[in-house]
Amino acid sequence: MSFSENETFKELKELEIGEFVNCTFQSCDFSKFDFKKFELEDCQFMDCNLSNSKWAHAKLQNISFTGCKMIGNSFENSEAFLLELHFKACALNMSSFYGLTLKESSFINSNLSECEFSETDLRSCQFNDSQFLGAVFENSNLQKSDFRNAIGYSINPVQNNMKNAQFSVDGIKGLLDSFNIKIE
Image 1 (cartoon, helix red, strand yellow):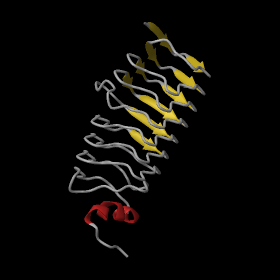
Image 2 (cartoon, one colour):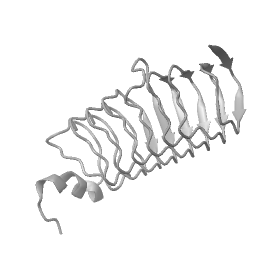
Image 3 (cartoon, one colour):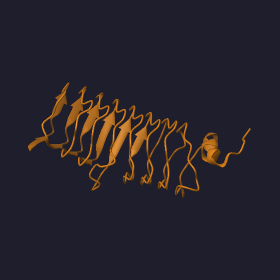
Image 4 (spheres, one colour):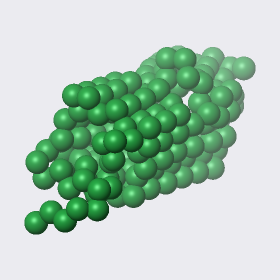
């Protein structure tokens, strides 16, 4: 297993299993790549294609994704210890975060359409300017999360812990969808 620290990797399509600390991955095409047994800490992925990548058994500590295409990713079997993810301007459509603890993670200006957030701990997360059309939230912990500038969500307040979560007045419809009431 290789070790890399403070390195920048550009335009790669493959990567040897290893431990990466404070590394940057720029314009890489890791679509369908298997990150199994990779250890990533304080790393950044910028403008990468990570669609349909597999993250089972990967250690992801404070990882940032900016401008990445990440359609169909499954993070649900990532190593849980110190898991922290941050997304900015990413396409995460049809990705799964099922059962994860993602406290204080951020999803900024990202497309989260049809994502799976069931059984997920999303306490104190930021969802500024993100799109949630068709995303699933069931038995999720959304305490203190900020949805004020998010759009397209439909979250059942009865099925989720939403204590002190923040929503805008414009987003109230997304909290009442499950009750089949008409709002005009």
